[in-house]
Amino acid sequence: MKQLLPLILLIAHILPIMAGDGSSAQSPLTVTQALARKNDHKSYYVSGYIVGEYRDYSNNKHFYYLAPPFDGTSAYLIADDVDEIDLNRMMPVQIKDYVDNYNLDENPQYWHKRLTVKGTLTDYFTLPGIKNLTDWIAPAEPLDDEARYWNFYETFETKKAYTPDGSQMYSGGTYASAETCLWKFVGATYGNSSNDMKWDNAAAHLRLTESTSGEPGYICMLADKTDGIGYLRLWAARYKEDKGSASFGIFLSNDQGKSWEAIQTDVAIEKELTEYQFKIMRPGTWRVKIAKTDNSANGIDIDNIHISDYYTPSAVVAAPAEIPVRLWSAPGALCFEASQPADIRIYTLAGVLVNEQHIAGHGSLPLPAGFYLVSTPTTQVKIIVRE
Image (cartoon, rainbow, N blue to C red; front, side, top):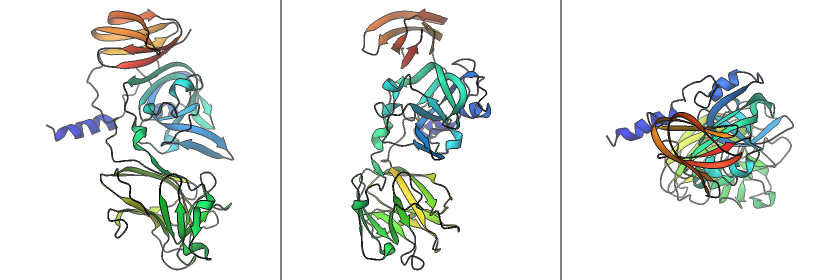
């Protein structure tokens, strides 16, 4: 039975939520369903995992984060898949009224947890989004903070940190990161030109060791990561002026770079900046190498590398066959549906007990507008009651 349990938990994790019609908190639309409504400007309940935060839209480019560290912006990104990295399968959710209590910078424990909201399906940052929220059902407490496993990230933003080995641009060098570790560049250089495809100011630019000939370029860590590797995410694109195809691969070493194991090779590089994710799940001590895997002279840019520790995501939790108590808000009230009698306690966020009730069946309890923590026999839920 112990061997079957991880599989059962995984199945519970990856199965999509049952589709609803969006009319109530008990029958929300999935993100896929909401996207299919194509901004019809009607109000629905929508449920999805908080996969990141949206930062800005500028010069026809979307700026967003799907892994820590977060900025604490006023927009979530939600999706049906907790590991989603395709922006086309996500929806931005306007959280300006809730940002103080739920932004991912100060509240990273909400990342990768399920949120249900009611709001208008409308254009938001040029994407199909959700605005003008009238109900908010936060993830159930207590929550495991998965962001604590994501401490390794590299943005290549500091030009003075790069020291070239020689006068030739692609002779290689080292990049002394203020964020992670020392990186070795071979057939690569610091890419901050107008033609480099980068997230902010710079990226690692890989080509060949002799620019237009030689061996494929790479960057690799010159220090060990001791907490294992769970997920590796990075952004990549072809150098803007290069028209041909190019590819890259991910390699691991557990002997301080003496030998390398191929994890993924010949990953096709897109023209535009694209995020890639690799689920590695290796405990132990490792170094990572990111390399071109084609012999063409076409350059590629690598940016915003995020590597998590080896861990078991808390989202992989067995869902009970039946939830004894469902809670949601209505104007001036807390609504409930209890499949069996239960005791609930309602607290302010400061911990002051507001009400204590024995409930059964369907009903509601009057409450002044505000934020509350509702405790049931099986969980705790944050509820926002509006006037």
